[in-house]
Length: 414
Image 1 (spheres, rainbow, N blue to C red):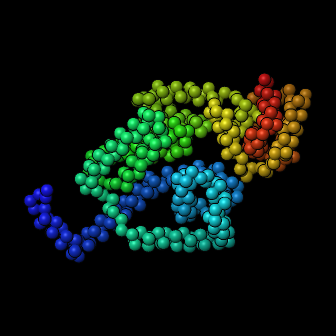
Image 2: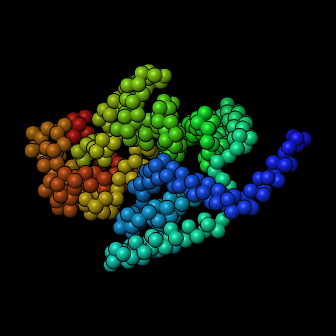
Image 3: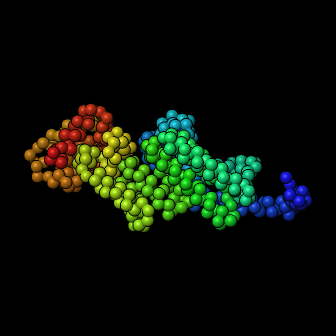
């Protein structure tokens, strides 16, 4: 039922909107919202997107990296590649394979060639891209980002209802369904804005809960990259969220990034708030995992000699090793060449001279096998690490795995 005076107020408002002052006010509000959106994107969203894109590009093929490398200074390429990354995530398609086979790779290679010839070509393409985006945005009518009190209350009620449904799915063990609900709830709130500080705090708290709970579901499903992204989004809203930082540390640990995991847990322990004891226990587990293992030892101290510590799962260790196989510090060896390198290294380690080499000194081991590695094209310390990564590519092969195990035993005195 309409309240007294509603019709009169509606008529006055419509009349005002039709006036020049009304149009000027709407344009000013639109510009303010556009500026706020741009500032919010650059300060909060863009850094997250760039980190996600960097993680994804790390595992891409050498050809894709060669095509993308000269283009990364142009913002339009970030925007395009991130859009492709999101699309691959939604469709459950491998990002590297998609770039390798899709027509976008040919376009990137052509643009990279143009940029190598003349850097101004990249500037021109970047300008044309964003000019096209601006034209498209101007031609599309967007809903205002700032919402009134009633819309805000409706959004909170809907968000809390979504939380309840997602929690029920979690309790039933339906983590995929719960993850879908949490991500949907976060997406519905992502672009809402309110002018009141108290209301903004409530909105931020609800968004943080969605991202944090979604990260918990992702951890249950072993989707560690997704868990990292969700935790980062939660921490971008509330950097002091202990539970989100704890989950981020767990995600890092399960991906094998012990350094970042320990940094997350150390920050929680230093704060001394809730979760400090659990974080301290996780730090102890990380130190225990850092003890010499097979992957730390083959051909010296393993593919993870750069401070990379893996989880207990053997398959995870091999996948992490495979991610390190593309670099510019040495040649690419095929399976037979890797076996030959291992055979020659075994002969070298079984020689009498190897007895005097300190087995816990990586520099001494590198110096001892420097001539042999040089024959295969691996020079210096970086070459030695590249040789380890070259072997890591073929750990699924039984002969390579057995040879690597024997090498580790010789290095560790087992």
